[in-house]
Image (cartoon, rainbow, N blue to C red; front, side, top):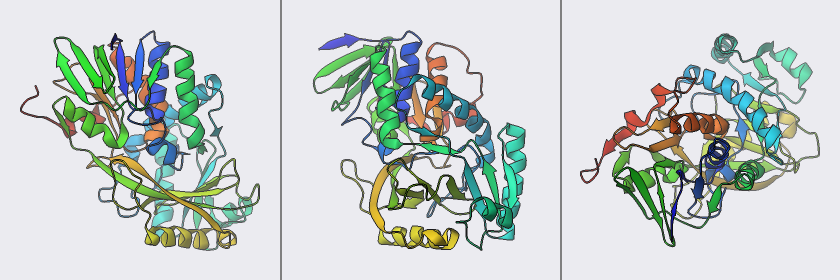
Length: 384
């Protein structure tokens, strides 16, 4: 079977779903291809935080630090786009609970104050609190906390709801989904791309590679070498009574996040490493990551330390050598676009908006040229 469309989107996670919806609403004919069931990769296994205020620069075991200041304009923009998405996508699972970023040392307190200044310039509302002020507002915070910043825009989207709901809406508005359709070939023939799967062929002027940890593999089929590194992270959940924690809590100097989801679980994130990434199977969990994450809870929120651990799981993510996101057209491969990396869940509606503008030949109204794939790209000899 051969079908002509305007855009082939490879990857049915949250970025692919949001991009398919935005493109469909722009009038494009879109097909979304996924190697397995939608939302079973990184988008469905992430902690699901919406990072609107600046977070820590390094997750546990991370090499290069994230240049968090450069991302703040993007975080400001994506915040409002999540509201727009919630208005038009039923069942998105968005929770704007607000969040605290805590500090325990003098150096970390200075980091809070510095980031507060950056956030003010970027238009992100945050308030700096002393440790005593923060504990009056959230008594569960431990005595080691010297200061905190509060951001009312922080929150999360339920990861098992957000992507599927967005994809359903894209389908309802005209996008085509082909799950369990792994891409086996991507070839430029004339002015068009031919994308093949085991049971279909799709011809389009545009391919958008948002396959997360498998992005580099898709690009390589087109002769494009992207310096991208899949890895795996580990999450945990504690059982808790309702309304044990009605806000998001993170740490400015460490990989740490905790909030309560709709099922009552306290979900612990923060980028703790899991075992080696596997192409088909989930990575193994690491006992030392569990121990480290739970020790943070005991120190930062001591009243929650006795709650039972009820689940541990791992999920894949895509990283770049500089730990910054990547988005844009691939030079030398007309009509081939990529998006992913750091903050992909948070940035999903923004990446969707920007990719849609790029596909239609419009200059995006926010400059993301510094995150271009050009810094990560080379071409195989049989390519361009």
